[in-house]
Length: 200
Ligand SMILES: [Zn+2]
Image 1: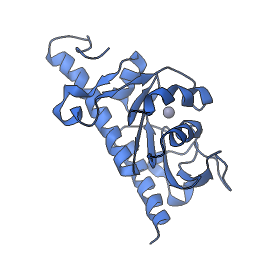
Image 2: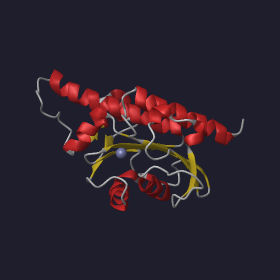
Image 3: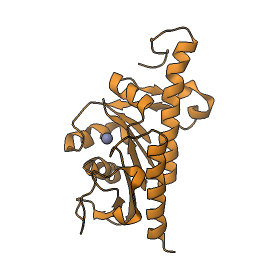
């Protein structure tokens, strides 16, 4: 089995897990993998990621051109990240509800809260709110993604990157768990609805 077939199967499986784990609903979210050179594999626009088929996935160039189908409307965000981070081979974007609550509140996540996240996620910064799918949205991420593998998109969701798609997806899961535990920690400390120390 060649590598492209494996990557397609991997993307379908992770799309299914995004939906099963409530990290997206409806046709939200998008995934991509750098195939080499200026070629990429990306999820199509307007298709629920829980029901993706391998033949639905699109091979595109960096301008978003492909022979058939319409790539994710948020491709400019992916392209901007690939251009600025040559080490990144895969990107996962979703709207996980706990993390998106921080994105909507304009609050960074503090990875030092938990021992298991302290070493891999010192912080998850939130970038400025902008219209999804626009060049402005892509540009808003740039100052943060250069030295963070996970970023919250203002009033929108989260994006994570990695050397492969399973790694980027695992980081998204970790960000969502960190956001959930951060809010529960505030309650456990008796802080009511207040945000915990370290979260600005
Ligand atoms: Zn989105």
